[in-house]
Image 1 (cartoon, rainbow, N blue to C red):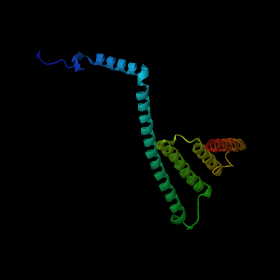
Image 2: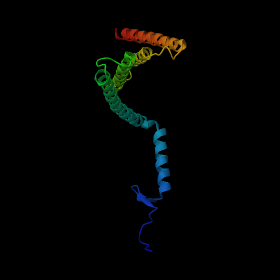
Image 3: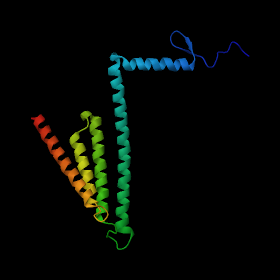
Image 4: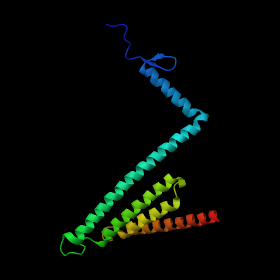
Length: 182
């Protein structure tokens, strides 16, 4: 055995050249992390890190949403092409227009979600008005594709209540925004 070789389980770390085992190093790092979290002077740096994570997540969401939009557009284009040109009688739809309108509304909802994300990235925060409009579009889509043969009137009443409450919410937000602008 070579006694002049360093022990591989001991690490030299720090300005003082302290020799620490990995478990000791982990404990010191954990203690320092807890100390930084509980220190009132570190609030700004902590909030700055949180903001960076929020921005990163928002950017990732926007990239993923663009991917969803592209796939949805390709799917819609394929369905329309097949419906119009692939099967006789040409120029007529074999699926219902309701399903095609539902696909169009899905794309509009995805665009509104992307607009919410980009508004957040621009620094205007989450605009509640846009969120309510997105929700209204989603409920409208559900009504457009509503299958009266399979679902009961209770579900339709639930959708009506959702539209009513979202409409009232939208009106209140618009009214409040107008009052604050004046």
